[in-house]
Length: 269
Image 1 (cartoon, one colour):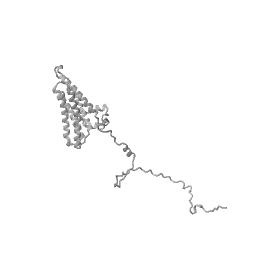
Image 2 (cartoon, helix red, strand yellow):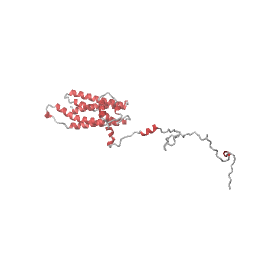
Image 3 (cartoon, helix red, strand yellow):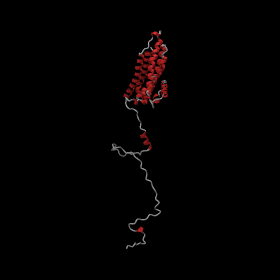
Image 4 (cartoon, one colour):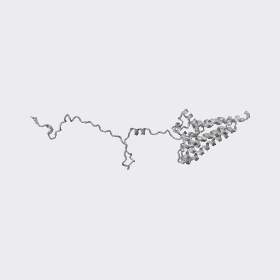
């Protein structure tokens, strides 16, 4: 029969014993481990560059990743690629047309910088083609002495179409490729927008050319052409901002004057 023996020695002093936890030692200070910041590390192809400091990703950095610029361009032959340039309100188009009537303003590119459009170019060019072909025939009707001697000239429609559409498409493209070759500031859509709205004054002055007075017609067309040419030249100069391309600005002025003279000679002779 086994007997249990007890001694008066405290068990905390025995070899191999675990000291008891007192009440004062139970209240310990609770410390939270610091949260580790997520850090960005170099990619696998960035070997050999040591000693760089990698900043932790903050909320501002994460937001910058979410605000990456997107583009709607889906190819040259995709209609949806050009739909963004026709997303413009009527009030905006009217405001830009009014701006083009002021030849001394050179802030047209800053006005269209947020949303350059092709709607104005297409609409104004088509309107001018219709007006030149119809009003030009009406001007010839007023100039003849007898109504029986007048016939509607269908060739006015063809001449107006190839001259206006060709001018507003080819001239901005030529300037775009030329300035690109000269390593200057260029943007084809903005050039199309500029030259398209520059035709606004010809739409309005065409009705004044119905007056059957030759000298007055020349005064009207030269004034209109000069205003349109000044508008294009000043805005083009402010856009490229290079002194060695002043001849390009002068050429743009001359081309607008040449277009005005062509309109007078071909449709209101």
